[in-house]
Structure formats: C-alpha cells, structure tokens
Length: 212
Image 1 (cartoon, rainbow, N blue to C red):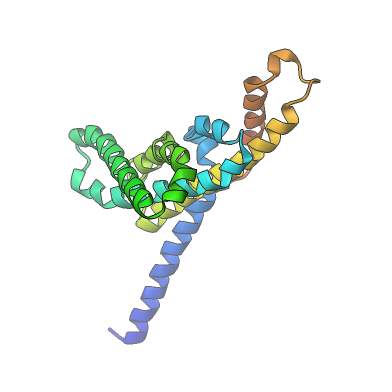
Image 2 (cartoon, rainbow, N blue to C red):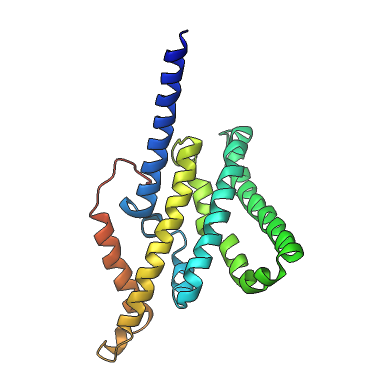
C-alpha cells in the first residue's frame, strides 16, 4: 500500500473522530442539553447556582470526574458484555469506578495539596457522586453506540452545558427574587418555570446527534 494513501487514510480517520467528538460535545452542551433533556445533575444545578463563586470550580471538578469515569468505564464495557447479567453489573461497575477515583483524588489532594483540598473538599464529594457523572457513563455504549472520542465529547459537552445552565440559573435566581412575583410562585416554583423556558429555547435548536 503506498505511503501517501496510508497517510491520507489516517487523516480521514482523525477527521471522522474529531467530527464525532465535536457533534457529541455540541449536542450535549446546547442542541440537546443533557441536564435539561435527561435531568442529569438538575438537582445539584439548583444547589450550586445559589453561590456564584462555586459555579466555576464545581464545574471543573465535575468535568474531571465525568470524563475520567467515562474513560475508565469505556473499555470495561467490552469485558462485561451485553447479557442480562451486564444490566446489573454496569451500574455497580460505574459506581465502583467513581468511588475509586474519588478516593484517589482525596488521597492525592490531602498529601500534596492540603490547602486546595480544604477549599474544595465539600465540592469534591458532591461533584464525584451525582447522577450526571453516573448517568453519562451509563448511557455511553448502552443507550447508543459511540467511539471513545464521541464519549469524551459527550462528557465534556455535558459539563459545559451544566456550566452554562448554572450561570443562567444564577442570573435567573437574582431576577426572580422580586417582591412583584406572586407568593405562590416565589422560590422553587419560579425557578422551575424559568428552567422550563430555557429548555424550550434550547430545544428550538436542531442537531444531527440524538441523545435520547
């Protein structure tokens, strides 16, 4: 096989993987925002959005755990297979992987970055154990087939969408804290209505990648 042909095939392969990474990232973040479509991380979204200073560091930690969990679980899916037993083993595997990653991160931060650990210790636990981390790893290669770049794009896109929604929710909370809002709609009801309107706005976009 000529060298030029092999080099061209490699470039096409790379472009294919990058294209899949891009589309899954874009779909999970905006076109079919995972938080709004599936509800993954919606409860923690409301909690984090109450303190603006926690939004960015929490989203970064969440991104690390989500991506690492997906990367570790991706090759393990092939070992588990697709039988009846695998339906019970996959959730256990994902939770176990997340737990191990959490323990390793705590040990490293405590031993080498004590000051940083003291600042993010509370966020670390919440970021590691929530249904966004477990849910993304759960739908990869289970709800639809995807390559490794697509899985990474989905993980990063979900966290980018979480960050976007966190900022929008924080902005909404400030504006909805208004005495003109009827008492029956103050607090959580008004926030849920606001998120519903955001969901309708984002659903107005169309994408070629379906996460449902």
